[in-house]
Length: 486
Image (tube, rainbow, N blue to C red; front, side):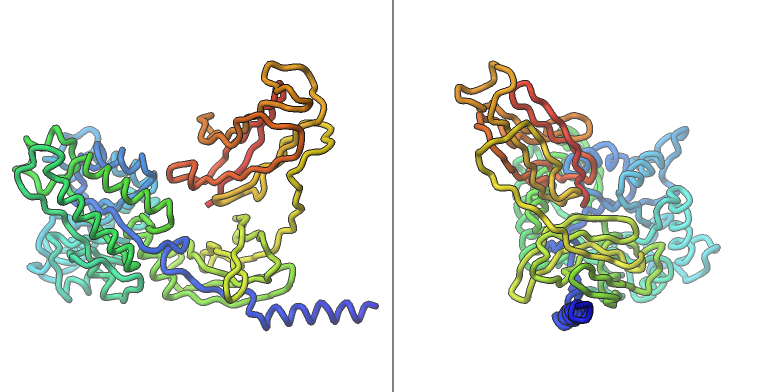
């Protein structure tokens, strides 16, 4: 009896290997988004913190801010012209924004001698000392992104930038490809919006807005990585006084319209809005990653993913489709202690799961979750019950089951007329107690029920974390926790 069982297990394991279960296909962009977009800000200006940051925070977006380190003031110093304070950019960095380098003094780098990292006024000094300055002020981040002053560069400047950074931004009207060579990463193309005068009202900027949104949509359609160059961001009521004295300012209203456009397409998986540094990390990791299937069976698939890059810098999750057995409808993915519960998709070539994996962060494991379905039907139900959502943790959808008993417990003004009928509400709250979704708000007879919750459609740019769902039916109230893990 033992031999046939062993034979069956071995046969199934060999079948799994033959079916290429565990094979991975990395996606061009994170979460298999269609395109990418980076919001970049030049010079480290005070308006970046005062006016750009609140808009970014509203939509949950992160930007790349290229600063000139000596020109940012400490809290006990007077501001220099329109530049900001270190404390402000340190706060933005702590919240996930990227602080990149724009050199020490904004020279035309093509006019400088090569020099050394300690020779003031030379090319190497401007590149190296700016990076060191930023990393001393923000030790939690590696400064890997550079911005050429005046967007001017040549092969000599590029070769110097490659010594200290992972990418460099220049100027160009065409968006970037999803796959880039080393030279292309040091000539990243971004565009400046130039406004026609006069700019006496918001409507005067509408043509530039519509043109830029059309350009961005075209980059989405062509699976490109687009960037915008932004200097000052100011409220429209300041525009008249400043429009002739600062370089191509955009209004907070214009910027909000752009972010609203990006958010709409982000929630529909059309665009990935992320910092320049993180998209660079993703592209280089994807281009350099290899995987090895360690084991493959009907209970567990183990994969080792490596990229041979500097793990202190290249630590961004790669998205990949993993081929799995056709009866794995829900899976548990785990790497380095992080666990995710995922639904899977049946494709023409078999069933796959879209997972996130960080190269060189340990063995990635994926296994099936066996589910027991409960029919949504009326019948004899002995008591109220609010069940744990499934899957949990979830991303971004989950299901919530609950039961309403046949016999009413106590008469209540919220009950309907029939036996066991209750007025039922099922609501979702964030960790601060803010209501974010109403899933049920109606009279329901006795029975077992199941409803779905989709964080992507209920929450603007949903964040990983703890949420609560609360069932109230007559006098019965019960609350449970659930975890969104992106």
